[in-house]
Figure (spheres, rainbow, N blue to C red):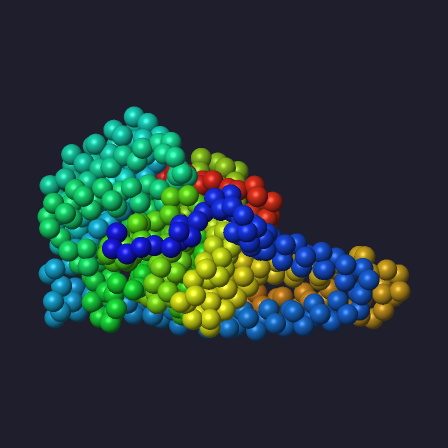
Length: 510
């Protein structure tokens, strides 16, 4: 550690504090859920007592939703073109004209109970990359809690790949460490420190020359990922003050996943593509990369909370007094869409995964509390970051429900006087037509989906491709059941102090 860190930098929840700090942090934990529930209460209250005004509001809100859809679609189109361009660039040729021989990539692959097939596919993708494997340091990070089967897979991979990469390290994260929450954050934090001691120090590698890619075990690097990442790292004026965010494609098993799973996965991809065009709103998500030196200076990822992928950005942002950002590289890595042995289990897994993602609302109390404590961050940055986070999670849990409820709620509970009005008769038709206009954006979504699909596997007939288009008719179901409701549950759990633990998404391949 090269500098003294704030005692509040790695706070996980209010129960770790005492006195007035506990009161403030606990109040901030209540904030996201209370905003969402107050909003939904006002929906019912206004529909009953003020149905006319509510009707005008829902028409206005529907128009706003159309404009927002157009706005987001424009960003999606721009990033679609950017990703296509970046996939066509010869990144290896581009960095050949730069001094990059000193750069090394540390790839962290944490796993729990995934199959040998899932683990090995990520490793073979590293070998298939257009990058010298001797410049890749691979850490296969297992969990002691996973037992003998996971240990045997790790040993088999170590024996097979230890002489191929620049270094190959198998780590076993101990179970039941005091103060740690079992999950990806605690595992990769342990793995990174082991890599420092057993690889970087042993080989006398400067920390400033190492780029860390924190992958999931199902993350499959596209062939030019490391070249593209290296180029972005080298051209940035302050590479130790940025994280680099690729676009997550859920293409590994997309042809096998059921329609609702495909829509949920692709919707997540589209949202990340949109955020890549709005870097001021972007935080790290899932697979991400940054300088090892930046990580080492803050003692790696937090080990006491769920959303380690986004929290590491806020750790670095606060530790650097707001002088830290996320650089979108608009280049993909591929992961698994949700798939289990049955459709029911798959749907349950989708819900649980999105509930875990929705629990990223735990960042709201964290950043506001640290903004209060850190006087060196410019007020404008504090205000902007707070608004983006609060509005984002509020929209996630309420906007789809507002659209779903308000189209018919005033008609049902607005009373006899309202129901005899022309406005009451026309409201459902007006909102329906406005929402149909907003749904036209799904045609563009379907086109983008087809553009990024991997080749159709043997044995799948052409009508399967048609289903990739028709699946977008399920989007309204997805945005309510697998986005708004799990988001609302996550915020409610945080509000009530029913803290969540880390849930590992099962990986299943046909």
